[in-house]
Image (cartoon, rainbow, N blue to C red; front, side, top):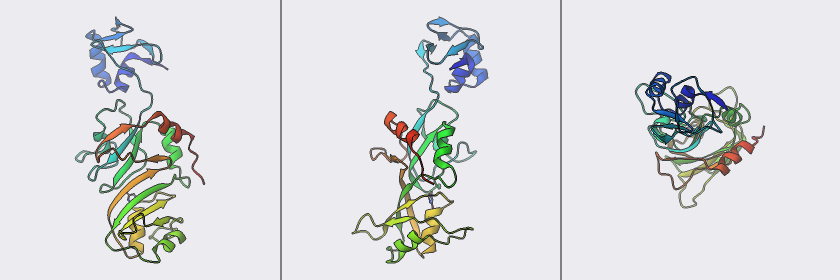
Length: 241
Ligand code: URA
């Protein structure tokens, strides 16, 4: 891809367009080892080696991150007063990243963050939502009818009942722990489904999204780039519906 040098540097979060123009004028940027003082110079992202003060600045068209979201971070790109999930990606280069879907402020677990709009659109397209799996810690033990009620669809106060969802008890010794598989994504959906059966979610964690599983080695608040294999799985993924 051919890009102006100042755009290349700004895309990689070296600074704002004005700041990177200043760096270029100061002679701190080189292309293939030669000082370049023209912000409008076209560079080929595949061919040219751009460097700042001699340190290479590689170009990433797309970035794909897995975050183990901690409670308290909001699933937004900017907020005037609260920490967003993007504040938790100090290694990210691109400034146009956004979370693929939302988790409530108090929900923890798997969040995919990218700047690949097409991929996000495919994963979130209405009626084609990828499966998402949550672990919910509940106030009261699961009831004997709950799995059936989730499977039949619940009235949670929206225009239509929820789509059938799978409710399982992953730990026979802990009846307050539930695993829920959703095929859609409505606002506060898991919490509202448990409210509809007279229970309450006290903690919620997402552990899977489509073909991607939360990496158990990531502590809450930690992130890592998706592996090439994970990106391939996401790109090859065809949601049903
Ligand atoms: N359902 C909820 O209630 N909250 C979330 O964050 C995700 C699913």
